[in-house]
Image (cartoon, rainbow, N blue to C red; front, top):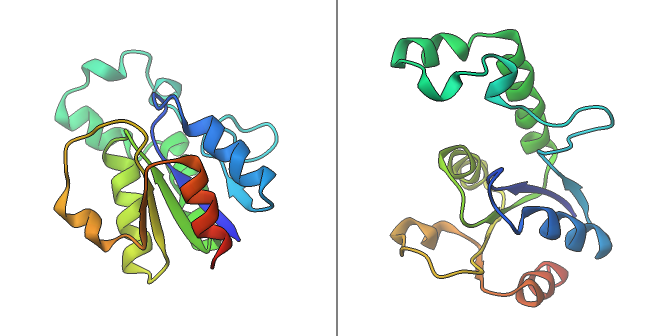
Length: 142
């Protein structure tokens, strides 16, 4: 299966999930390393002071060629993928990506390894998994 792993740069489990799914025979998109020589989009590529942007600066930065390239790379990977694994904890982008999969009629699986705040809309997911083994077993059953 072709899997898009949606998560956060700060998520300590993201890399392990990518490796685990690949070792189980899946083709996996890794936003941290989308392809050889590309180490993923970072706002700091546009401006080192990105964390202090105004709302207008943020809006304008979305038009920057670096942001456009990052967006297109991730969007093409979402279109390519058969399913999404949302690895918690994560932020807004990963949740928008998860919503894309639900809207496109592609399965969304959520991996929750640490306690987190409940979310009612996670009912949209094809599966909510609390261990690596549970996720792998579910994906084998597809």
